Length: 250
Image (cartoon, rainbow, N blue to C red; front, side, top):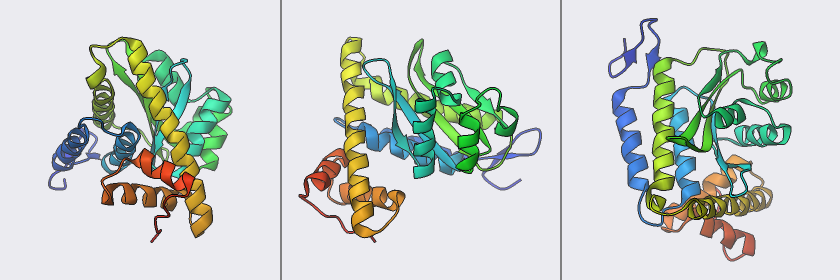
């Protein structure tokens, strides 16, 4: 057993407690007054990849009309697959949000009947297994966290618990300043997050085309500029779309 890692009875390793604690501290530090929900959820998606052996992660949120939208993803491939889930109206994250409980597939190739359109799309994107956990507080489900894996493999119960704990942190973060308000206020905040995502996607496309780089690199440029200048990610994206700034891509 490697130092700093826990093992299950099967001998499989799970992420070490130190890295997990650092992730929770990082997420907690992000939850300051007037924090950027989209940037926070991107940090969560990337943290899940680092902690849980996942190849990629994505997050969906419920909007004010009860629909779903992609708000964060660790890679462009996972973002497009999340969008496909919504367009096809099927997939593990949708089932997870509808049922309010975790949904997983250790081998998507065996679940074609379950998700006949989603499985081929996941395979084309290079993903062979998946687990989805709800962003839920008691009976209220406001979204879902999807973890994608390049290999067909079981997701350990311990890792699924960590994924749910991280999703719970995200849920509390979104709801913490709205706990005393009615659901309309929450819906407004979520809608703002979804609107922010539109601006970010537009800015990514502009930088990708202008600099001849991929969408992931373009998004990295936006995040670096926002953090280097202590500015919200959404504000940077809007400035790029307007042509006010042109952050350099490494």
